[in-house]
Image (tube, rainbow, N blue to C red; front, side, top):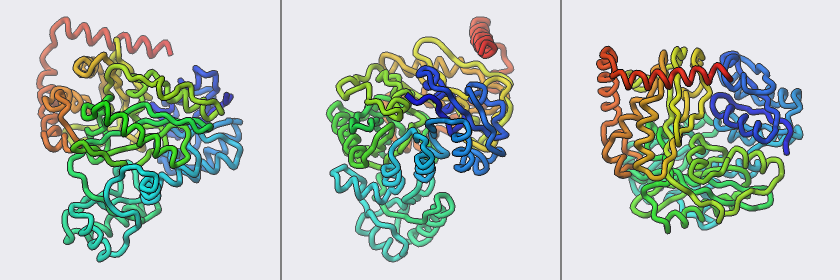
Length: 486
């Protein structure tokens, strides 16, 4: 087993990985920016090193500084979490060259999967179902129009090196093609240093379903079933659940096999996620994320597999603790991303000081968070405050438990998106499981959230019932006492 691991990340995912390390007897090293000096993950780590100013480009994205700390601290492994260095093949190579274990997939798999063009071609050759389109970079406007005509409008222009919803644009007809192609190529070059763009058929209003895979260095690869991530805004996920309401047992088994095939084709090990679009009973491989996902806790909730623990064990040379037959999902899980966003200002990030913070608790409730009362959320990074993870015996009870937990969650001093999650949990189509990636605009969810926030503000001046106020105060006191004992 690795003796010491540096976590090249911050926030809740850094805390999550450190907890897994603690259970395995692994010492932890934190790297932090000036803006994160008082962050929870820094307090939690066994060792900590400042690596620069607040902007990520000067700290968490500085490969040389992180490697220098890893060598100075004698860390045997580096866990990149997600974001920042997680899918940076050059950083993984730097780790290996310096005798440090990169806790993730092999560099060859990262390089293959970070190129959507190359990965799509390899998946086609292996027999994985992919979205109709072309597997070549397009730079010429006229050629792009010819290809789009053959594929059939509307089409999607995609940056080959893209990710996080960046570098994607839908084109409805050839009149839009010239301007759209230039725009996406320029954005791709500025964001990823690679202006390669390709064309895919636009699948209108699909469901977004991903399969968790994990493998060891001996070639054993399994999947841990699916997560549905269709509730999105600007191609970014907000709510995830497992299992998906859209899949039959037969389709679930078939897509799971496709996910394992994709991973084997890439020569993959460690944790990864194969993403699929699903519509009308048909599914299409979209891409593979070569890292741990934000939404991994709901998979852990229904399968009992500690994915971060398995990552550390695989990196240490151990075989998987599980076979495919061992993975038997139970119950239903939902994750809500609690972000510092202002619902009354187009959900703009709202970094500021948290003056009140009390997490919900009780059966089936898990919180992954990197903040505490009194912490100031920096303006330089993702706006996530916490992840609310709910498990229950079935979906209706999971929804009811989520609603209860959202009601208990107390955050003051920071504008947040809890009202968004409350509106979704009450939506009839969500409750029926009848939703897709168009869910938010189709049902005017954001307008409903604004109205909900205004109503909450109006009611805040009126006292709650004595029982309700006592319940909330009890939650706050318990959370504060818990924080003081850490």
